[in-house]
Image (cartoon, rainbow, N blue to C red; front, side, top):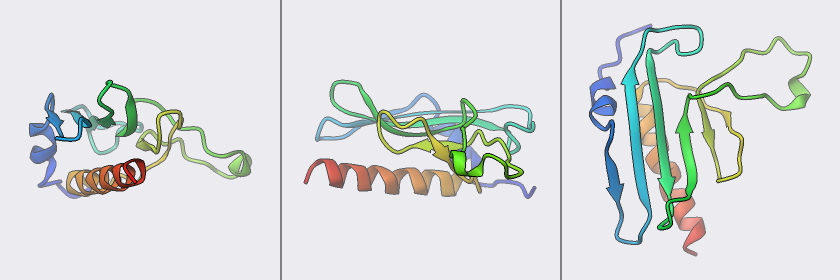
Amino acid sequence: MEPDYTLNTLLDLNGQIIHRDDGYWMKFEAWQVKASDEVPHGVRYSLTLHDKYGKRIMGYDNSHAVKLPKKFKYAGQRVTYDHKHRHASDQGVPYEFKDAAQLLSDFFNEVDKVLMEITK
């Protein structure tokens, strides 16, 4: 795996909360860990979007394995930990972690998309 030169940007966001003027806010958690089968890129993260009451409404993380849809039941499936929650009750869908820059870009794009849908 090539070095991720954008990782420090993600790690610098650890513990940060960004409040928006409309009451929504984003929370960032990211720290390095030893690379493993579950975390091959060596970073644990949780990037979440919350409403003004604190309820998480969307997020990207790798805190637990994601169950693949039943249609893949007999396929040689890989257990994935990187995933995104598209809404508050979503149990998560796999997310392909490329590097920290792509994760941040995907997260902020999803924030824009979700808020556009909510505030229509």
